[in-house]
Length: 82
Image 1 (spheres, rainbow, N blue to C red):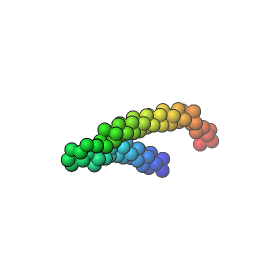
Image 2: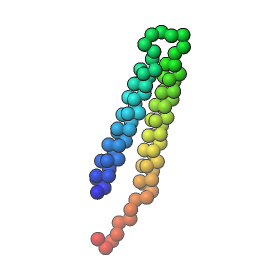
Image 3: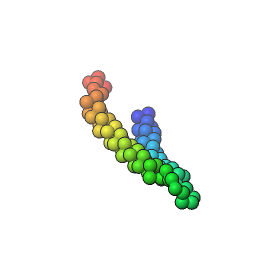
Image 4: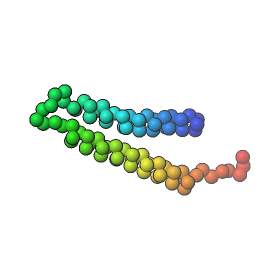
C-alpha cells in the first residue's frame, strides 16, 4: 500500500512539473499574433510565465524540503512486541 501511494504521488508530482514547465510555452505561442500588430501581448505573457515557472519551482523545492523535515521528525515508532 505504501509503495503504491509513493508511486502515485511521485508520478503526480512528475506530471505536474512537466505540465507546469511545457504548457507555458504553448500559451506564449498562442498569444503571438500571426501578423505584426501595433500592440502585442507576448512580452507581458512571457513575463508572467517566467514568474509562474520560478514560483512553481520554488514551491516544489519548498514542499520537498518541508516534506523531508516532516519525515525526519515524525517517524513512526517501532513496537517491541513485533
